[in-house]
Length: 373
Image (tube, rainbow, N blue to C red; front, side, top):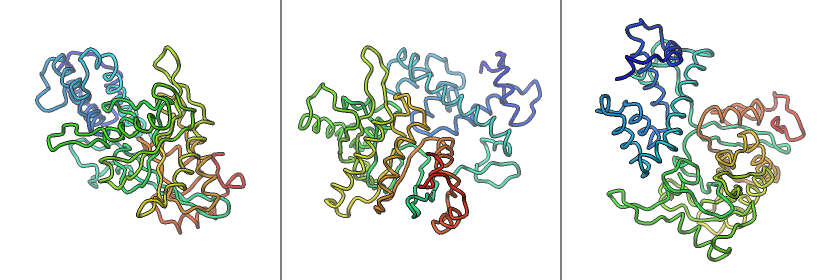
């Protein structure tokens, strides 16, 4: 409601990419832009909290801000004050990122579709949805391997045997309400009753059992350690194992972590070795594995550094000619674009035979054809 009384020059300029607006309708244009940005979020608590924070949720338009913030905080199970200091920055930062991406898209492609029009409709000037999967053909040691990149939250994975999740060297999983890969998998793997109540925090319990059996509770394990557990409720989606890769070393006296690329490579290699060790014990055998960009969250590694470190282990395994299916999961198309650039100019969302043909016509660098190094 306050949009009509605020001076918001940056948002008004950003809103102009959706079409020129009369001075009397500038507030509506900004609201339209914000609604579009929020619809581009990943759903779940993050999107719902954004809708409450901005008064975009149904019935909240004229609700006092303190009440909207209270509802948003309840989604994360935290106090209003904690939400204001922490989660709210993440929520509004995500909205801002989508606003910037909408503006960037307007400079390089057709105008964004109206939020009132389905994105799949073929009306003039609409933008197609980005595919949620890309299949990359990669030349490794004289043969072509296929890498599938998933562009969605990690808890939406389907029919991938093993997911490799980053964690800290104390093997302490984050609270389930947080937004990290590890927290998402913990949340998705929990068993709940029909009303949504927690019955068993299975993934976290199995990590604790491993620590009590093989390590010392409260003491760090060496970076690169990998802890295998079941996938809990994710088994309903075809995910059978989670490998928890200890790559983040807590920095004493702070809330920060240090992550070394060498530790990421070591953990990725250990995950692949573990897959080889235990894969045939399952029926059917484990044959597919998915990596997140380990250490690129609070660990502080750039997405490029993380992928390069993970890929070093993957490429070594692919060069051996093992028949494992390799997957990567990222949250945003821009990160999938980065992966594609680092692997070279390989076609995506197409068949393997087409990939092999195009790779043969593409000049690559290095003996492995990996332009990313």
